[in-house]
Every structure is written in structure tokens, then in C-alpha cells.
Length: 453
Image 1 (cartoon, rainbow, N blue to C red):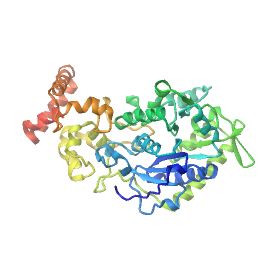
Image 2 (cartoon, rainbow, N blue to C red):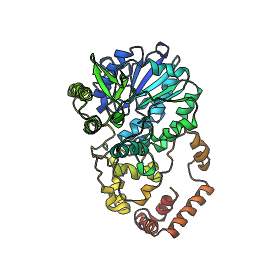
Image 3 (cartoon, rainbow, N blue to C red):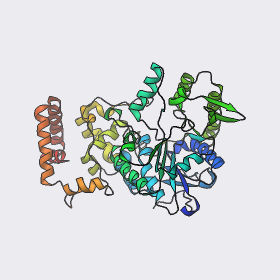
Image 4 (cartoon, rainbow, N blue to C red):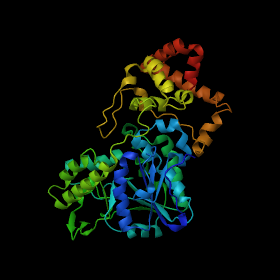
């Protein structure tokens, strides 16, 4: 394993482990979260997981956390195809159940809390810990009471229908059979379906949890208004300040979620749903001041998986094409190498996809902008993950030792292609165009390989 910043302590020493998953850019946020945890719960063990390459200057001894882990600590940490197929938000959320499961395998660990890096504790959370005496899974909904305005319904209630009823910026999982079953189920879903794709009814790791209260027992939906306060519920919670402490509905504020802070969306939404509230203004201005001070200390950093090895930025459409094409995943297991996949995009890719290869997304949008291509409206094929029970049951039996498809699988694929060819003029034009360009580049064997991929 690659030597990383890592200060693991004996799991017997701490009963509650707290996890947050980030890219290097979020280290200033994590420092504020870590300080608040050390202030109110010094007995907890805070683990920071980097879905990134750790910078050389990062030293756990100088941070407000107990431990720093990174991708090589996970089985899929060397799977460059899987990493490349996610943008930064998708990757930081896709790893969550894998890391939580790993942490709960340590001896003496009672439970694991997950907190987003842009959260801050403002009080002890003993009531959360005590919930594990009767429940195994703790969730916070985005809203716990109906909106009273048209604007609130559109922004908040419909927003929750789009992104998920529960906010996965917080999660509590007990270290028992029920908790492990949840993580096992969640891992299976996120390995292939941690996608920021509201058009496919998915929003990274989060929307899956709409199923959790139905699929699993001993799930506690936390309806105390002092937990996970954020712009999406400020319209129904009264924030106040007294004696230097923040209160929600006359109870001590437990933890606040400073979501959307970099874009300015947080302040916009707070002004809309808590207009003139001096306590909210104080809360935000104080956080902004502390955050800016931490940002100045480390400067700016880009995500390690944002560019190809030659420094050229990886576009969203590049990740999407690769994710949807198993033949490209097999041909270019290291898609970051510009001499491989990027070269294919610039030659065969342009022949096959035309100007789609040059599609540039608007990165300022909350919901990723997708190109206009019908094939994107379907779900991509599963990626290879030997640790998956579904992969072993449904995918592995279809593969020979050389990973060629079985006759039954080939027959199903041909049946599917013929059906689409006969019923869809658009897909018929696509396959004819693909066959023409592939034949020019690789001959009849190339066409057969492409169809069977």
C-alpha cells in the first residue's frame, strides 16, 4: 500500500468514530468541523477520508482530526476506471459506505457517524448517541414540516423529491448486523449507481435512502429541529442567539449545515427564508470569517483526478462516454493516460460521436448539464467489482476465464441490438454510423468487438 498520511489508533480506545469524506479543497471546512467536534466531543475519533491524492504538506498531527485515510486504503482505490467514471462530488460520496464498513470492522467501535465537511457542531450530541440504545440507523430529513409558501414548496419540498427525502450530510450507523446489512446494500448500489443524474432519478449516494425506512428495521428519523439545520429548513425553524450560544426553537443548536457556501447559494437561501434574522446573519458571517482564514493558510488546490496526466481537463462528457462503454474500459484501464483514451476520443471518438466529444458543461449549475444524446438516458452497464455479490451472481457466470461473453449473453445482446435497429430510426442511424467508422479503423473484427462489448 502506498505510504499515506495515516495515524490510526486502536479502535478499543474510542467507542464512536466520526467520518467525513472530502477532496483536498475541503480541508479548510474539515478544520472547522474538527475543532467543533474536539470542543464538544473530545472522546470521539474523527477520520478524514481523502477521495484525492494527499498533498505533501498534509500532516495529521497539525490537523483537527485523529486520522487521515485515502483511496489506497480501499479495495477499489487502485481501480482507475471506476475513479475516472465519477466527478468529484460523485467520488466523495461513492466511497462513504465502503469507508464506514471498514471503520466498523475495528474492535470496540460502537457506531459510526458521518458528517459532511461543511457542518459544524454547536453543542454536545449525547441525545444522538443515546438513540443507538433503541435504533441502529439514524437519519435527518431535509424538512420535518410542510412549507407554507409556493416558493418554499418549489425550493424545498420539490427539491427533496429531486435529491432525496433524507440529507446524507449526516448519517448514524450502529456496529451490529442490521447496520452492516445497510452498508452492504448501500455499497452494492453506489459502486455502479452513485451518479448525479436527476434525469435517471438518482442523486449521488443520497436518494437511495428513500428506501431505507422500508427496507431496514430500527431506523430512527430524527425530527428534533436542532439537528442538521440548513437553508432548506430555515423557513420552519427559528434561530436565535443568547449568551454567545445559538438556539433553534429555544433549544441549543446541535449542528448546522453550511451547504452551498462557496457558490453563494447558502447566503441567498438564508436571506430568503430567514430575512432579517440577526442570529442567522451572525452564524453565517462568523463561519465565513473562519473559513476564509483557513483557506488563506493552504491556498488553492485542484482535485487530483480533474485532469489527464498531461494536464488537459477531463470533461464531463469524457467521463460519461467512458462509463457507458465497456469496450473502452477494457481497452484503456488507465483512462488518465492521454496516449490511450484521450487519443481515442480525439480520433475514433470524434468519428463516432462528432461534436459531442467537445461538449462543455456549465460548472456553475447545481444540477450537472448533460448533452443531448438519447443513449445517456439509459443506465450504464455494471462495472467489474469482484467484491459485489450481484456481480458474482449476475455478471461472473456470463464470463469465461478469458472474460468473453457466454453464448446466452451474446444471444441476448444481439436480440437487443436487432430490436433497437428495427424499431428506432435514430439508433439505426447511430449503429450504421458506428459500423462505418469502426470498419475504417479496425475492420470487421473491430465491428464484432464493438457489438459484443
